[in-house]
Image (cartoon, rainbow, N blue to C red; front, side, top):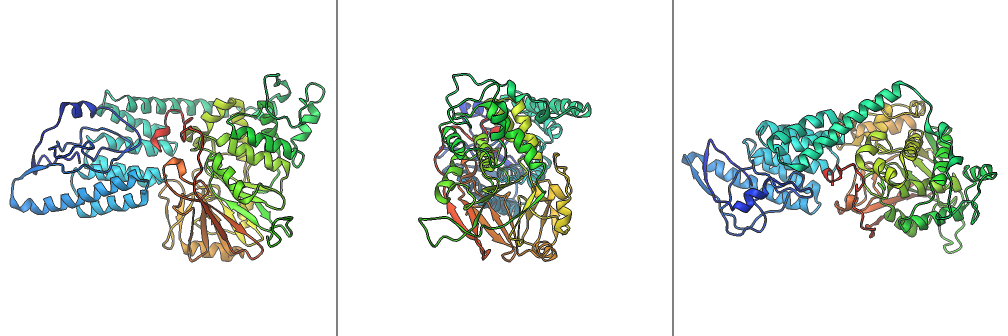
Length: 584
């Protein structure tokens, strides 16, 4: 419980020397800040939350811990009862968070704060709820709670740590740096806090350097990169787009022609997928050609795609199968779960088209394989797969959540720059059969005609506000009107705003992604809004199902749910520049 009410409660305690020594260290998966060290049966423990065992974790609770409290007056008996109830709620919240039941944990922490709304002990409860909000990417709410924790007790290091974590996630390294400096002042020997501070310092310098490069101008890598200069030696045992033949000098034009839309052999695509499955790469020259062609292709595509459901289907094994399109939500680098989708639902083809609704990369450590698979199918047949941009198809998010580090580890910086060019030109939305509006985050908080969305200029990183930001970042809320987003970016929109947008554009349904859901999907706003999320057991920790939707000519959604499948032993955000365990 790590609680000390020095002015109102006299606390008599004992604590082992080993426990005090361990309190200076930091671990990263569960939070023991508000718990007495685990498995201490029948012990009397010091209630002093200045000793911190872990910044990023909570554990469930201890059994039969003795607390000796000598109250100054009998009037404080009510305080004792309220405090006991608050701590009980807190312990239950810790247990729920440890099991991945984040929303349950948030409610239990909130109950604790209702029972005991004031006191220094609330720094612990607020900090734990801040961690829960971080787990579900509600960074705006996490900052609010962490700030309140700091106000409750300015000497409590976890308040600064949690706020710094949320600020870092929102690409505010200067603000995060200030908070991690405070953690280092309070815990000067803590290596974890010093590492976080060093990472913030690095990002601040990188941002200044990048700004200087942008101001100096220069052509994009897709123009300056000499792909023909990349040689393929005999040690490469992967697939080639020309079959077994390496198209060397004198045949580069033929090789380049294979990477035009609709020209890439399906055999090459399937061979590449099998290679990815074995944790091997395709050659960098082929990746560079694919990305450069993809950039030129997408920059010519509309901001809002108009997609029709196929009129026929060639399925000799199922005469009752109806033409349809499959819509998937976030897949976040979970390549083996993407393969599971294809195993259940078939590979992309003209008869079995897919729309992947953003957030292909980051978090999961097989993001390169996921996005390359989508692009390879796109260039085998552009009508077999459609892609919309998510908030994680952006430079700032890639830098923080692992994709940049993964690309540079598997290829190099130029390939990463090419990915960014592709991302900047991806469409922002799609309309299925003129009736279903699909976008990653949500709709503008002030409903507009879709023609205004079609006019959005792409080829750039999104701003913190505006139409593009709304499409990438917004979330639905159950009550009417609009509110500042719990994420700290964009707005939340109510059912009335959804109704106005759909009516204005003669649409019947909004499909969006962007939020993990326990069942893989959620229908809300009176059936007018569907959230679809296709990354099961998100970050190997959330325990959620994944789901996808099929629409046939009736436009009635048909949901398929599934569990996560095993993947190689590479943890989520393994390439996240040393900051991965902040968010998992």
